[in-house]
Length: 246
Image (cartoon, rainbow, N blue to C red):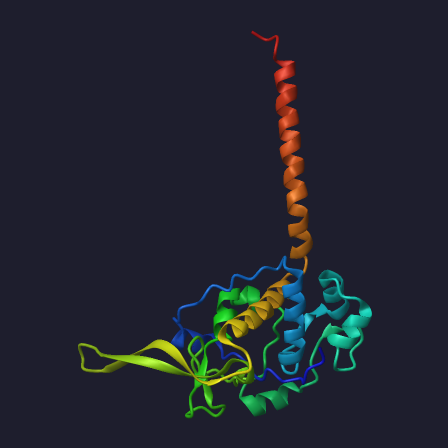
């Protein structure tokens, strides 16, 4: 599973940029953090394509391994490529100042990105890059116009172009609105396979944003069953105690 590490370089622009160019329709991610196989694939995607530039400094490798059912040896062989130790947090070696000089902004830590932006946002963002020769990276994004992040997953998704439709407002100013994407250069994955790849990755980001949720969700059914049982028991006792009261 040791694929070539491709850096998921750079970053999201400040919130002001999002407010200025946002408004894109967000597709439903429909991630399932209870699907361990999906989380394992997402972990592999993250360390191979994201961890070169984006840290997850609030999560430890061995916590991920324990929650996802991965042995320590599997963790070392498949998820640690930087010389880090199993108990280390998922940090990066890139210097923030170098990253800021290269990309214009330091790549953000992704530990809480799924909680701060939402899974639908991240899912749509990773699927919404399009060719834009006017940008230094050669790509732009519908969800975050002007993003400093290059489309490093283009080899998987392929290159797509944005189709726009224009209107003229009352003042005679031309307006353009996004209509759809057209795939001009196919990637190594089909559109369906790429969507699944992104969904697994977003599921992993949703998991690391709150690792305890796996245990919390697992406890949910027993706790509810416990409450239902004792509610019925209390009801039966009440009937027994009050059966002779007229």
